[in-house]
Length: 442
Image 1 (cartoon, one colour):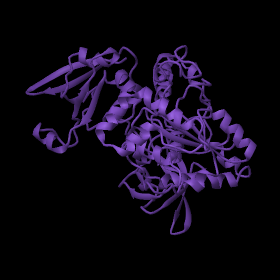
Image 2 (cartoon, rainbow, N blue to C red):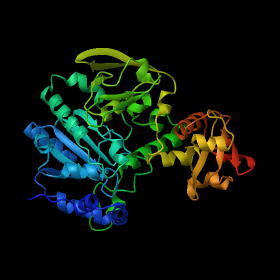
Image 3 (cartoon, rainbow, N blue to C red):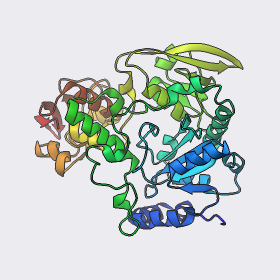
Image 4 (cartoon, rainbow, N blue to C red):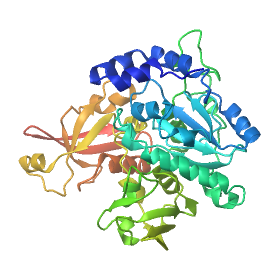
């Protein structure tokens, strides 16, 4: 069967922001269009990861599984590039069994552990289920029309190299496998259980029958909160980006440093721009997502082993992790953070004031100055609103914290230090007023 783009993807690639918004409105149409274009495609196995692994075992090929939230605009550019034929990716993709998943209902959570907030991710497997690596880029997540594929090509190449070395390299892949999980599938997680079926409702409304990847993270955090009371840092700051430890990676390679932040964890490890990261925590790196996975599984403190290449020579060092290092992760644009805001900040979306606005309010550069960019009005997101907070209020003290703090840091500190029902006090600037308000932790 000759390949054709899904109608929704073609529209995205050919249109501007107006059409992008129109595509969001037709979520059902986008999903059905994707199915009609892909279900009988010669390259792609559609929405059946178990069939893909079985085919990988039968053929001896590695298995590439793309997880794509079709109605979501983010990552539409790279998604279209991966689906296209007659591109530079073709010779690499032809060496894989390729699977396209558009919903998370049947995922085996012991195998499929990745950044659930991304709308486009790829996992590379051996047919026996051994994971070679992950790919998922926030570069594409932030720009729906970004079609950069050089990093994806590097990940494909890296996965093929690991496959050629398998099973002799099996021991070195242990750290890449999923961690123990209390739930086998998303349908077993409280909050999702009983609301969804294994198969999508193609005869009725498709989109409401789909478990979206970000719902997995949301449900796991909610369950943790209800059962344990507190949420660990690795659930608040999942899959930390390389920038969390001061590393900026090039988009066109697997893991090449283009910058190292001054006085950062990476700087203390002796890394420099131009260094190529070879392995982290003993794990071979085929993409920045592999770096994020190694950081995700890293301890609260300690030295994380790292091997890098400089001028063709390999060197060993370690990342010195200290208490609170995960809180440097920016979670402000994650879908999963909305649920955390309901729990921790009463439904407020907070942003740090720029220097000029700080100066206008006579606030020191190192003082807290968080503007309420949005204050929720409904359900659990309305807690701050009901407590008297308003949009554009500037929070200068929260729970005794008066120093400059990002929203991401604040959410983690509040959720780790408070139980449900605790009250969070704040000092707020509103025009010429200085108010004392408080909201409940939920």
